Length: 325
Image (cartoon, rainbow, N blue to C red; front, side, top):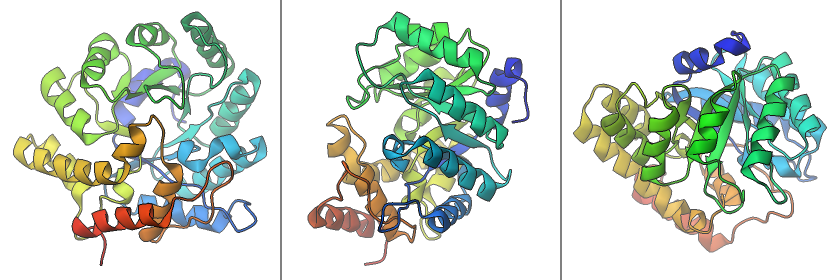
């Protein structure tokens, strides 16, 4: 971490670029962490040309099924492997303020650049209570915070743009992953807090219109927390890299065509699951295995997807030319 907390917002605006890519958690058959596999997965991410950062401890790493010690170890493994080559964002989400502060300060002490913090994950949550939750954590933590505004039902609470206005007053809060999946809410969020927070919609079909309609002063250069480069970037189909290049060169037709190619693959595999308001973690794990990443089983209560679901995903990737037949 190369900034003081009062500098977090300026640092985020300057340092957060390109795709912050998340990885799944590889487990051994006994469901312990596959440490060698995780290091390999992080190296795989770093080899993707469009990678601008690594996001560890996300829902794709099944953090709700990990112990505190395992969550710390996962962040250590990622940070040791990255070794300062790109910024690292560590997920510290939960419902216990003490645990979250402990995870955040551990991440900072081991070289993380910022942390991701969802709203609390259980109970009757009010806007006032959630804002107090964030304020207390920010007061006790020593690292910049990215917050998560999602409409997915699995989370059960969405940070509204008005709440983000209040959170933007906190020095440590420097970014928001805006995952409402609504272009109107995305634009509203950019309008209300885009001058103070890095507002990142991690899907090309929102990110590109944000730049074109809201302007580069409010729209940002980063797609925070996405798995798309893991299956939409190959040597023969460098879609995510070329998408960024085209967008930044103001080549709108090329960026649009690449955006549609990426979206068609992502929707072909995951749209029906997202429509149910949940991340399909196990299917994502199966897809990354197709590209040589370490995976292993998932921890209960998750279960591996049915063979026909995996076959459909493979067919989508083969048809797009991203995977050999």
